Length: 287
Figure 1 (cartoon, rainbow, N blue to C red):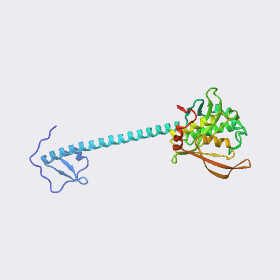
Figure 2 (cartoon, rainbow, N blue to C red):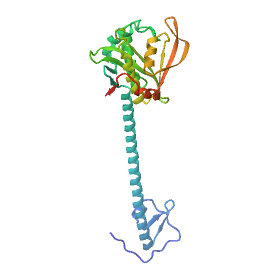
Figure 3 (spheres, rainbow, N blue to C red):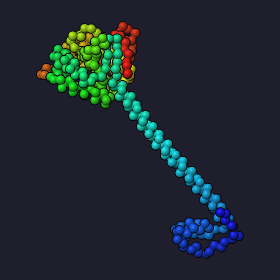
Figure 4 (cartoon, one colour):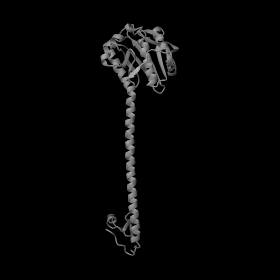
């Protein structure tokens, strides 16, 4: 409903005190400090009314923009969290690969592999140069599998069983462990049952694992620590491009036997440089 404009309304010399609700009921009153009010001319009222309406619209617009901005920020935050979770999931999958070569499949271990692994790593011949004693019971195999899977979930290491494609037989395992993400470094280890020695399986599995580590994990360096008396492992490392870099004397003691450590290392650039030279069959990653 429109308002009629009187020619002039006198302003009293001393503004009266009124209750707060009067501000809502009388459109000709404007609140000042406390509950003091002042009457306005119609022209002043009209100008102030337009200004108040514009102010209200501006404030509503700012509130809407703030809310939209807040909603957008929350939405952006949700998207960032989802993206980060997805990246974490993808990285975890990189620590659980299945790698195929011409003759082998390298895959994560499961509890069904416990008996095969126990048969291999309870053998004193296999464990002769290891820094741990032979496994004593099937529980050792089960515990090793559980700890390996946990470490892969934590993105700390990769432990893969070595399976012969033609027969499906589990013949050993290979590992990338002591993973240092910022330094882009890891340590390699491998072992297979004695009945499969001398067939080139270690070179084939080791080359595939190195190729994966330097490629998918972005490693710059891979190391190996072996007993100097383990001549066959030293030759296998050299065939993979490792260089013997040092000797740590009396580093290990297992079952009262003290042994040294021969340290080997290979860089990603060295590994790639050898690609033009004869090498074991190339690998294809699956999954």
